[in-house]
Length: 72
Ligand SMILES: [Zn+2]
Image 1 (tube, rainbow, N blue to C red):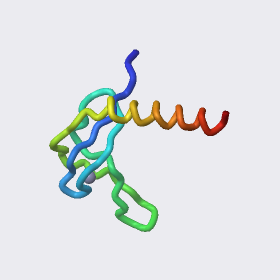
Image 2: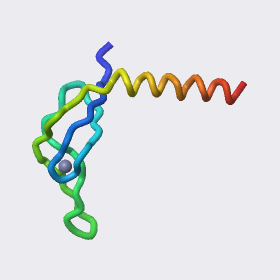
Image 3: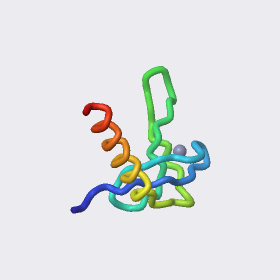
Image 4: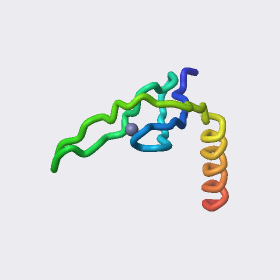
């Protein structure tokens, strides 16, 4: 299964950013407001990419189990 992976990375403008995509993110896709209604992509190079897929999916699995417990 080609699921998306979860990443954290450092952006010079945004600090720690979280990204969900299949390949390692290289540029920041956070949106920056540059007018009353206009946004643009940050586009800064990302550094210190970390694959946190396991942590995130574990957390999601735990949340699902808790939801099941609460509903039973
Ligand atoms: Zn950024």
